[in-house]
Amino acid sequence: MKDPYEALNQLGLNESEIKVYFALLELESSTVGPIIEKSKVADSKVYLVLDKLKEKGLVSQVIKGNYKHFQATEPINLIRILEEKELEITEQKKKIREEIIPLIEHRRKNTEEKQEATLFEGLKGMRSAYQYVLDTMKKGETYRVFHLLDEPLKQKEVSGFYRDYHLRRAEKGVFVRFIAHEKEKKIVFKSFNQPKSEFRYTKDFFPVGILIFKGHVLTTIWGEGTPTAILVKSERNYKYYKQFFDHTWNKSRIGHVNK
Image (cartoon, rainbow, N blue to C red; front, top):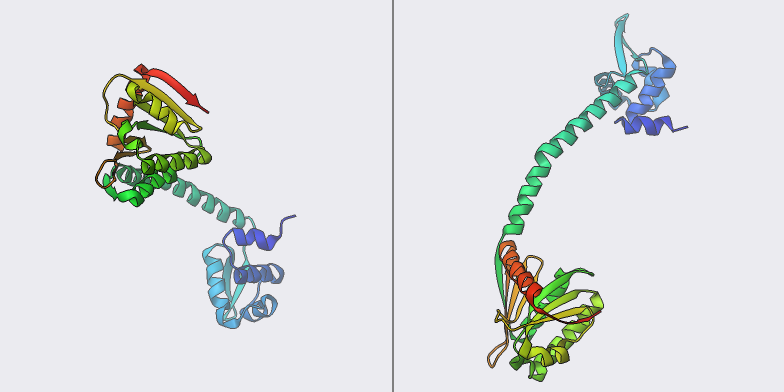
C-alpha cells in the first residue's frame, strides 16, 4: 500500500499541511491548541497552514463559544484536488503544444537559416577546419567531396595531412564520397584509398576542393601561397551544393569502394 504521506505530498501538500490534516482527521473538530500538540507544527505557522488547507478545501472552520474550531472535510475532496491538477496539466499540455512548441520550432528554424562564414589560414588553420568537419559528423554519416586537382597532392606536407585526416575519419566511422576528374584517378587512389570511402570519376569540369556536410560547405585552397579554407554555414547553400553533387554523382562513372 502506498504511503499516505507520499500520496498527499504528490497532490501538492507540504509536510506541515499533511501533519495538520492528519491531526484533524483524528481530532475531528478542534481548536488550535490540540492541533499544535498533535501535529507538532509550530504555533507561529499553524494558522498559515490551516489557511492553506482551507484554500484547498480540505479544512472547514466554525465558531463555537467565541472560539474557532477546525475540522477536516470529507476525504473525497482529495479526488477533487487531483482532478484540478489533471485539468491544469491538460491546459499546460495544450499551451505547450499550441504556443511553446511552435515558438521553439520558429526560433530553431531561424537559427538553422543563420548564415556564417569563417576563414582558416595556414596548415594549423586547415587542421582546425577539417577537425570541425569531424566534430560535426556522427558515426555512420556521409559527407561529399569534389576532389582536389593533383598538383597540391604532390607536396608531401599536403598528402601527409590528408592521409592522417582520413585515417582519423575512418576510425570515427564517418563515410565520404569523392568525385574526381578521370585524369586524377591514379593519384586519388594512391592518396585517398582509406576505409569508408567511395569514388566516382567524370570527364566534366566541376569546382574542386569542396567539402559538403551537414549545413556547411568548406572550400579548400592549396597552392604556393598560404593554405586557406573558407567555411560557409548556410542551409540553403548546402542544399544547392548537395543537389549539384548528387546530380554529378549519379551520372559519373563508378570507381571503387573501400569499406
